[in-house]
Image (cartoon, rainbow, N blue to C red):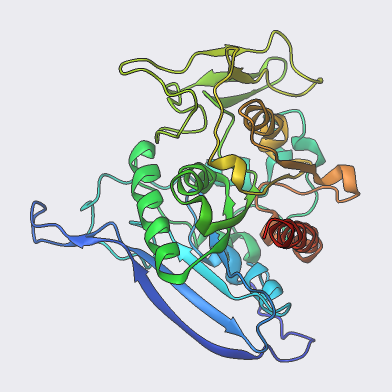
Length: 373
């Protein structure tokens, strides 16, 4: 395991810490009557508390909440970064994952381990060069292969996802809503796979979501992208995402008639070299009025596989009447990061970008609210 680093900084002062379970029920239709659908949330309340809204951090595929509570080379994580700046933090484990305890297979079949995918997508994309931006990856804190202490520490954290991604989206939506109904309005910080959970949560409870920070959220819209390497690079794969952004229905206006589906069209050509051809709604596009009430930041790294398509998510939202801030890290001078940017060498620098956006955005919301009184 990687050697732990002693923090060269002031002690982190907490008012309290603990955990809770949100959602879930005993299901007697499953052998043994286990509890299903519950979400574990570990909370940290700093002293002093400076922000009125906690940040709920939701990890992505094959991960757990450890993505945010430390790094595999022994540094503090994003949870500690925001705690030190006065934010209350809730770090969750997705339903049927990690400490959201469940009896094996009780909520559906789970995926097997995938060492190759971990290397290709998370820690060493440069070695495999499956998408045009992969060669720019420089920020992983280690050699990015088995036998390296940092890699082994990271790989030990990997946890199987449920096989059914539509089911993941539904049960995690319900559990996150249950969490927000327990703790009150919050900022929702999602990464990768859990990006597909944020949209239906905010659609169902827009007053409980004060902002969405979407770190390379699941995408692109309508179809997943496969990465094949040069020269063709990309291909659409998987079933159509029936709500455009995922498999959970969203509140579009005008309403779809019973039995009717959204209609989608693909770009004739990409916005720039090295990007996918994105999908949008066929015009006239239906709107997402509930999501339009929530400030949204979409953040994408330079070398991640998401660098090829997160612009398509921002464009899809904008077409549906949902304003959003789209930031490519290299455009603001932060270079070399991959998909697991919260674990990489400059993770604090990226957290500072998020904090700056939150301060500006929430201050603006408070000003607008005062004017509307």
